[in-house]
Amino acid sequence: MKRIEETKRPLRGELTVPGDKSIGHRAVIFTSIARGRSRIWNLSGGEDNLRTVQAFKDLGVKIWRDGEALCVEGRGWDGLSAPAKVIDCGNSGTTMRLLSGVLAGRPFVARLDGDASLRLRPMQRVIEPLGRMGAQILSRNGKGLAPLEIRGGSLQGIHYTLPIASAQVKSAILLAGLQAGGVTSVEEPQQSRDHTEIMAQAFGARLKVDGRSVALEGPQCLVARDVRVPGDLSSAAFFMAAAAAIPGSELVIREVGCNPTRSGIIDILRRMGAAIELIHSRDEAREPVADLRISGRELSGVDIGPEMAARTIDEYPVLCVAAALAQGVTTISGAKELRYKESDRIAAMTSELRKLGVRVEEREDGMKIEGRSRLQGAGVRSYGDHRIAMALAVAGLCAEGGVEIDDSACADISFPGFFDLLEGIRAS
Ligand code: S3P
Image (tube, rainbow, N blue to C red; front, side, top):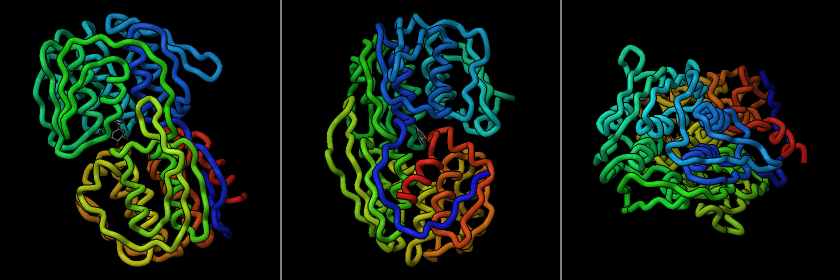
């Protein structure tokens, strides 16, 4: 349980956010399957990334801390060995789906399980293509739900067109493709985040990227290298939206990953009227990184169409809050995937914003939100979903009487220290 009081002042200050969760998972995976010793800096201490670390320890990879760095002693694909117990992916869809791609090509049996939320998330989307490549994957009652039992083995490349853009599914297929014979290619209806492609190349993989399709010829071995994980734009998003929506705010968030396949939040907040500047733009581990300076203004409602979905997918909860605080109406469409995340994020945000006095129409693939600048205080639910908890905390800053969020500890899944950081910038 967490109380967030209404802020009496604009937000000011400078902060950094934890390492990018998506890039962190991939850093642990690639260093574990490469040959040689690598170090990872700035890996988030969030529970999801720690699940991936534990998973590779369970698979026999030597991983240890050395001061600020995480050291990984990769011994190539063959360095992975059958786990003695079920691998617990916790709440992490990325751990379960990407690991499925790794394990699909390993000659042993592994079982993957997760918490109640992960057990409800669709895994058929990886089971199907990996099965076509030659892996045998059993799911609970054959319904495509975890727990999964993966009987990996020798794989053949496939050409696969994803029905829905998904970086997790694309990555699972590419990780299997790196172990398969022949060509594997993946094409998506919309470009999803490309961290796997970027990191695979940084570890020496040969990949052909052509618009929305990626192809590689397997099998391929990877070579160890050090990785510095940039700050997580999806974590920065909560502070960006808060500062953008509270007029007079001036916030700088340092060292944030700004990969264009992820930066829908910047474009949308700008369209709503916020001033967001990227300063000191540079590259780190082939990923674009910048410091973000956000100036708060009165925001206006906008239409957020299907073309924004893949680039913005994790930021809709906090964008719903920005919309609730904007002048006029915001519509979201083409975002049905939100129903299959850590919670049904369309249903969750509809119900919780209504408790705060916002008029919201729930639609199958989105929402219509009428802004009202100041919200009513209320007790709200996170549904155990880290991004819902943090989005509601942002709402609390602008709610008369504040909000009380149940099960707020789930913020630790991606952003340990979130609430302290929020207190810090409202006090400075
Ligand atoms: C992720 C991909 C996205 C995103 C998730 C992280 C990744 O999921 O929502 O938080 O790291 O590849 P989908 O692949 O299901 O779109």
